[in-house]
Image: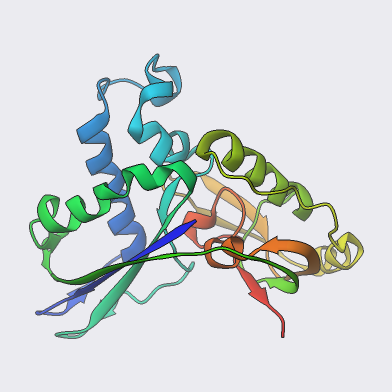
Length: 237
């Protein structure tokens, strides 16, 4: 997994009506689709060109599954910026999608023309680092995940990553499901809107422990909604 950090500043300040990171991500995906899709008026799920489509891969089947490139985001992000304030956008790039990482630089240097939603910005820097390693960890899931068994959430994601992005993550075989299940019962179900304006359901406040957790997931979060701030892991010291 690669993290590409983009630092921008707003010379005149900025005010967004929505999460600015999801606004940028939506525009980024729109660019990738315009540049790569040969069936722009059609539907992704019926398109015969799916297997060779860059947009289909980058977006995780048009956000139906797990995106291969996305911006790390919290459910609640700062939306007001004073004059000269900065915003850091951490793009998470999975496996073979590093071949499409050039789209990020293209987006900020040429496509946006120094403006997001009519708000001027300066591109200050783009830096890249590799995330890897394994650790045994106790954790809190501090935001939304799918409302099914936590081990299943993680392993479903791993299976998809390995199959579609040529990663080599190992399935999680040891998860403290007793602790997780007890806390889940006490958790409250929450709902939020995804980028297609569907209701998304999951649970907050899950605790547990995992043997052999990839450090990647501490950065990326877990589950299909990690690009929206879902399934973020807070590691306990």
